[in-house]
Figure 1 (cartoon, helix red, strand yellow):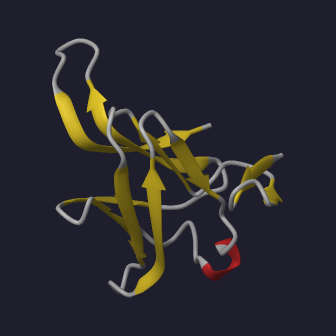
Figure 2 (cartoon, rainbow, N blue to C red):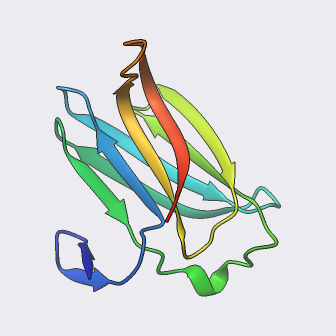
Length: 119
């Protein structure tokens, strides 16, 4: 059982997305999801402290027409940097979003690093 909304609500399974702030500064992250017709179907803002993480459950899965449809996750960091990620949504998949991710091999820092985690 996982919690969200300040720990007040509980859900089972993988979250829709997970955000981790790997930086030493506070950041604001705006998440918007678009369907395959470029219609915005979800908007949420998260404020993360240094080294903090947050996840959002899949409460609106019945509205999704998976697996036939691709969704676009638009992630905006501090109202300045935007990245998009296109994926299908399944119960066994979550979108992982890492802020200021440092590649262990190269040492290169990516402001917004997004990928699908399959479990």
